[in-house]
Length: 165
Image (cartoon, rainbow, N blue to C red; front, side):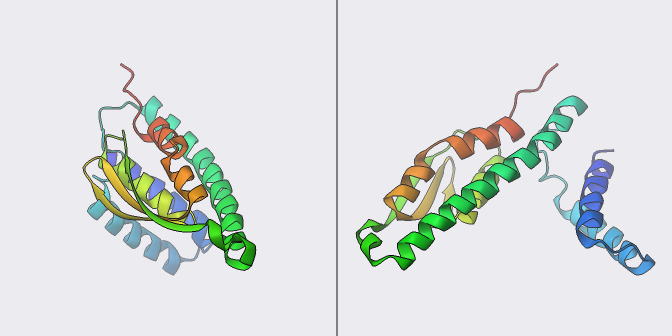
């Protein structure tokens, strides 16, 4: 049942993004979605003890995280563009390696955090070791953004909520 739900979720996303409804593309979507489900279904929603209500809440919260993340990417793009195009901003460029400790418990949560940081211009996650992430940051402002816990709190609220019994 679990793999069927993952398959249906991924296939629904595939249908939305492909926009193709002929036999060939539907078959291709089924095959590719089945393959992805087979190799990665254990990765999605690691804690299988959560009920349907919690899963539904996760699915509802994910789009809000995506919208917030797109806004953060936009802000960081503006900052990085300002650093790149303004000679007066050159002193602000301070490439730094910073280690941050995360309170996220699941590998999926840590993976989401690392990828969200890397998607944000001016920052790249270099390594994840246990509860620490090694991040390259372009400026003091991007370092402060990484060290803040806003992204981590949002990821924890979606993927690491306690199970309601």
